[in-house]
Length: 227
Image (cartoon, rainbow, N blue to C red; front, side, top):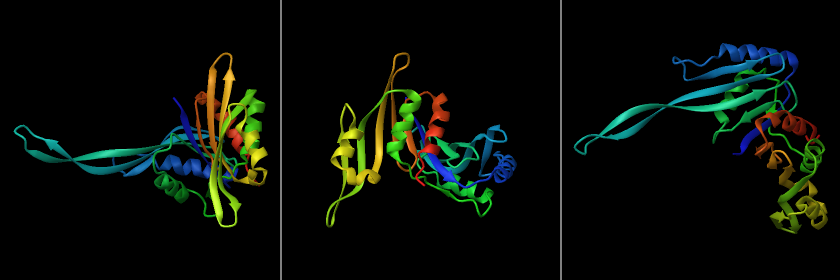
């Protein structure tokens, strides 16, 4: 089963990170509040936890005899997050459909001068970094977004190749290397078998690598940031 991560770039300092940890601990979720967090790990350079957002909804319940009754229910949206005081140090694991509530919540706890934004990754560098850490990898698919093919002609291009789709894309469209928006990487390991890694330029990742690979992925994101 694939794991999904969404990396964000932020400008938090070590001092601001310490203050954020304190504010998160003070925002503990319980039955009396509509939203809050429960921390599972909290250290000087690492915070892990869950953000809970409570919501109410109505459901129709079928009664004996065919009648219906409206029942009020309570649901929760849970956002798993991991934080570090590094450039790409805000990560959402298994992100829900919308993360806007969590991002708004975090922004209220940060100092006003801390910026949070989607990163812009150099996917060519991503492939090199992944290969340097895991060994030989193959890029099987490349997507080029918004390529200017001619005057008033802009298109998205998909390239597949079982040998090296990235190398093929760079040969066919060298002028659009900065438009590469997504790559799919396959790594074959004699012990763990085949692993897949899909990386989008905005920091979204889907992978079958074990969850212990998060540190490796984090390092790749940090080093592949475009300046």
